[in-house]
Length: 376
Ligand SMILES: Nc1ncnc2c1ncn2[C@@H]1O[C@H](COP(=O)(O)OP(=O)(O)OP(=O)(O)O)[C@@H](O)[C@H]1O
Image (cartoon, rainbow, N blue to C red; front, side):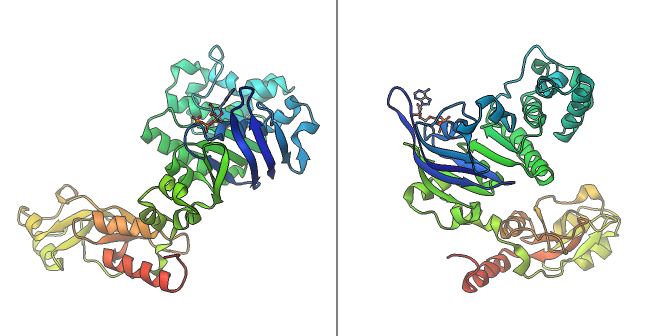
C-alpha cells in the first residue's frame, strides 16, 4: 500500500503543484491519477520514487516512510515507465530489458534469458530482441519499456502517460495488454493519464485532480461516472457519462429472445421461410454469426445463402454462460448497430444464443434502477 499523507509539493519558483494530498493506493490494483494539464499528476507520481522530493507531508510504502532508505534502494522496488519508453538507444531491445537486473548483480546469461521471457510476456516476437529501439514502432517501444520496468520484478510500477504518444488503435491494444498482464502479475500500478477514457478503462480506482494539485474525487470508475462529486468532475468525466456508465452494468437481466438463424448453404427458398420480422442471422457451421439476410437480400440470390451474401453490421455481446456477462452498453450497442435492430447475444464459444432489442436493454436498466442497483 502507498499512502500520501498531507503531501504538498512547492517548486522553487513558488508553484504549488500538489496541495495537501491524502491518497491511499491499494496493493495489487491499478490506481489512475487523471486530470487536466498541470494539475500535478506527474509530480505526485515522481514523489513516490523520490525523483521529486515532497516539500511537506509523508509518503509511506508498505507502512515505511520513503525517506527512511536511500532513493536508489527505494527505486529498486519501483518500476518506472514513461512516454516514448525512454529506452537506451545504443543497446539492443534484449539488453535494454536485461541491463537493470545485470546492474543489480544478476548474471548476464540469466538476465538475458529472463529478458527474453519478459519480451514474450509483453507480446513482442523474439526476432525483435536483437534490434535497436529506433528500429521498432512506437507501440513496440512502449512494450519494451514495460518489459524493462518489470525486469527487476518490482512490486510497484509507476506509469507516466506511457501510451500517449502512440496512435489510438495501438493505444487500445497496449491498454488491453496491460490489463491482461496485470491479471497475471497483480502489481501495484500507479498510472498517470490526462485521458479520462483511459482512466476509466484501466483504473480499479481513479483519482481526479484539479489544477493546483487538489484531489477532486477518488472513486471506482463506475462510481465516478454515476456520482461525480461536483461540476468539475462531471464535466471532466464527460457529458456522455450516463451512456458510458452502462459499460459497468451487467446485461444479465436483459431478456434474450430467440432469433431466426440461417446456416450458410441453406437454399434460398428455405431461408425465406425462416425470416421473421424481415431478418435472419446467418451463422457458420459452429453457429457463430456472420451477418444478416432479409427478403431483399434473398431476392438477389440464385440458389443458396453464402457467407459473402450477408449484410454485415451489429456488434455482439456475450451472455452470462457461467463466466462474465457482457455489459448493458455492449448489449445496447449490439441492438443499435444491427441492421435488424436486434443485438445478437453469443455464448462463450461465440455461437448465437438469441437476440435483444434496445427496448429490452432499457427496460433492464429501469428495473435495475428501481431495485436500487443503479443510481438514477
Ligand atoms: N521543475 C518544476 N519547477 C517549477 N514548476 C514545475 C516544475 N515541474 C512542474 N511544475 C509545475 O507544477 C505544476 C504541476 O506539474 P505536473 O507536471 O505535475 O502536472 P501534470 O498534471 O503532470 O501535467 P501534464 O498533464 O501537462 O503533464 C504545473 O503548474 C507545472 O508547471
